[in-house]
View 1: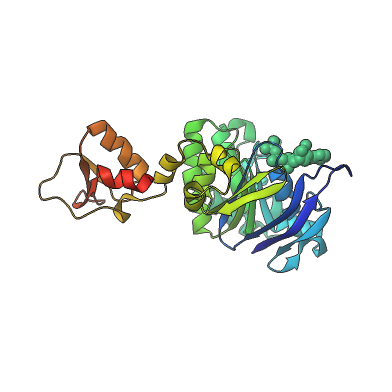
View 2 (view 1 turned 135 degrees about the vertical axis):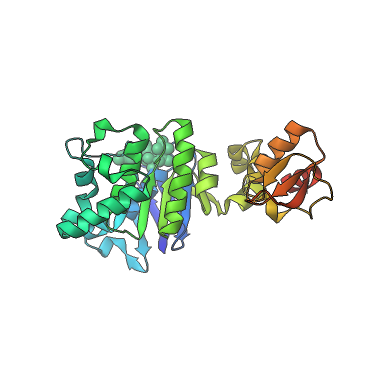
Length: 312
Ligand SMILES: Nc1ncnc2c1ncn2[C@@H]1O[C@H](COP(=O)(O)OP(=O)(O)OP(=O)(O)O)[C@@H](O)[C@H]1O
């Protein structure tokens, strides 16, 4: 668990606080997305966790231990850090890049080698092809995968991710978000992620922290934030389509009714979102659609009105 207690950051001794009396608790194994307008203090907050910045007042605890009292090198090596432009060492092969922290920790070659293969597999890259390549021989998406693998190398319990998909084209970005989310769940990390992208925060975050002028405005699950913005600023920040965005968090099988006697010809998977269902229903102009399982068997019926009611 990461506990941020009454933390403020004043960079210039002037009156302006980059982070203003922030209190935030991040439960172990969850992902928290920090979001808010440019300059609101997201990156500063994240960088105080691994002591790239020092709080002016307040303290940050990891599992009860004050990070200010932990050896700085030890702290950094125990926290994975992924940044927008990846920051791979250009003159090193992919395998050496991934081995950075294991080497600093003095791992044996055999253990490091096995770990490199395991991680490249995990992030969907073929070790036989990738190990000996250099960063400039990779696409942006592949580099981001390697950056992610490198951050995971020494199995840190915490991952900090600063705009990890910011420099990636939209199609690759969505695919990487899906894959990284699955991997982070599988390896059960505590993740703090900075993003400008509300859809990304909704998709990746178990909780979203919305900041403005260094202050925390709302900290809640994506569904609760979208349903109940804390104030007018948050409501505006979420946008007019927040009800539609909420539909992307609800799976069809959770609201479907029993299957209709006769199929209606248009179908959707039970684990798809109501957002996808809405698009299908509007496109088909039907009062509802069939819900099917992975084998194509009809398991339910989703009425248009059910989708509309879920938006409210
Ligand atoms: N090293 C620094 N020295 C002085 N001021 C800084 C420094 N880093 C950040 N700031 C200031 O602190 C405030 C918060 O910056 P921070 O980078 O944390 O915001 P952010 O929400 O991550 O912004 P962005 O979304 O634009 O990356 C801003 O006013 C910024 O100008």
